[in-house]
Image (tube, rainbow, N blue to C red; front, side):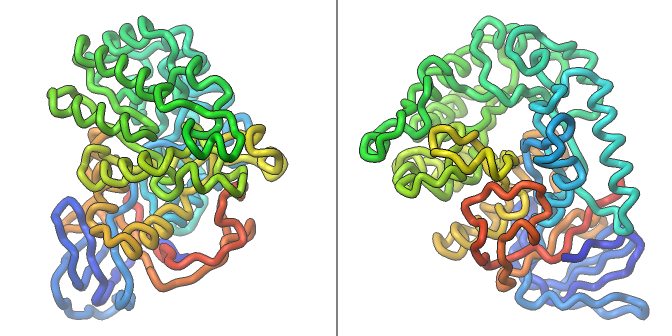
Length: 433
């Protein structure tokens, strides 16, 4: 994979330009220089000194935006360093990454926010192309993300954060109400994961026919929907906008649609893996399919797919979660939940949804670029003249093997390990800070 150079004059010829913001999906020439898209047209003349990139058969996308993922740094660097996380994001076409505060220590003080951003800057400057994704840490809602005591929200809001999130379910409804009340004037996104731990108990698979057939502890859909219904009532009472993380059930999609119909200020996202698998796929007991929330039953997967297509679910999140080989090489119920995905998600979603299910490419770009940026309150990446070169070049015909050596991530916990995939991002451009 190569990376974009900001000072270089480049002409990408006859590439398929896909941009959800403008509704564009057509073959074009794209000229870039000095970190800016200079022109886009059906054909453009080559200027002396221009690097010509053959775009035939390739797809040019706005930079992908990941709402939330997890890193090992600080605290668990053998699983993932900030550098390997950023490299993985770059390899997957991501230009902006949201980092959950589930680090050690948790991102619950402004000093740690600043430290992470300075670390990203130092890593980027040490690389010739300086094209690593921009980092947007989520500041913790509660100290240590333990769900007990509020952080200094007003102080944290002065930092360059994506917003506020614990990345873990909050179990105290009164605390949730207070957080929304205190967070309202700060004008930062607040992301919450609705999950009732008491109802979830030891469940590792969504409760239903397949949980019984496979003999695995079931997690009822109500663990999500009861918490979600209560959260939506709080949002209706307080009025603070909320982003709902990790939606995984058909009933959850219905509740979000009803909330939007009522005019409640909510957005929602689902993890990418829940669009690709369901509880029936757990017949293999592959610990890399052990997720939290667990994979839904087939009707849940169908509802999530329809929810993204209809815009009920505003974004697809990668929720990249690195684990060691030893941690994942255990029985399914004992495996820690989560998989990596930054390097894999776009290629696999393109193949499974666009190629095999005839999704519009614009829908996928909307869910993985335009939508997430909008949730953050940011201007989305866009492929238009005079815009920064925040984009990725994807070759849907390139084949590559997923191995620990080909992955940028330090962890390889993915069900695609050892497999050959179709499609790979071959170049990423990231604008200067």
